View 1: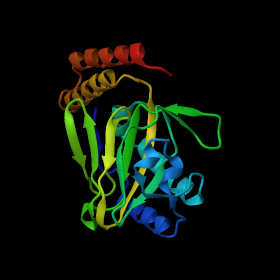
View 2: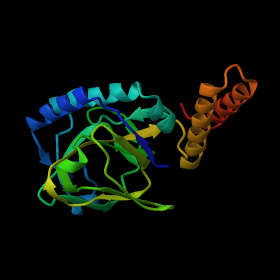
View 3: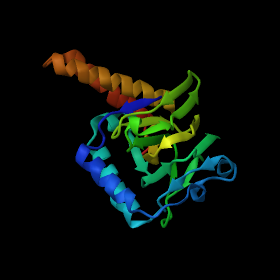
View 4: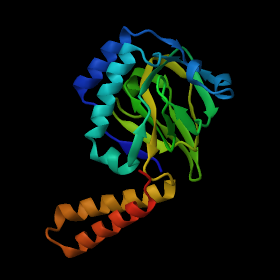
Length: 226
């Protein structure tokens, strides 16, 4: 399942992120890559645990907690603290698959990476290239979204970031362990929830909506890990 979540961050929040990232310390992005991924990864990152990463990560997580579309699509159980990366001067990240389990630095906790997420901080016209290219059973998808928008995609998918040939591409990236680990089940629940919300907005006090809501929660009860 691919899901676009628009307007996760406001204009003011984006401006705060950009100011903070301008003065941040940047390190080689391979510090968080696996053995095979590091061979195809060429970017910069704010170090995990850096004050800027913690500050901006808190802004992103708070925004996600208040975003009903994200909550419906991801059904999040755990979220790895957001990280921040930078691509410029031809930097790229070749085809790779994210590791299945992600440790949370500085804690004993681990997160199963059911979903990967990229939150765009630079506007599309500020850089050339830099598309996130995701390959799944339905084909290849090229993603380059407005600043503040987020793309959710299965952690199982092969994906890459195309070389940035002009400007700077800033983004946040992180992983989510969903209450529902199976992607097809999560897709069904998302589609059902979306239809229920659309019906509820136009049909008041309708028992059919209540029955559909009952089906949704019974399916969630059957499939969810908590």
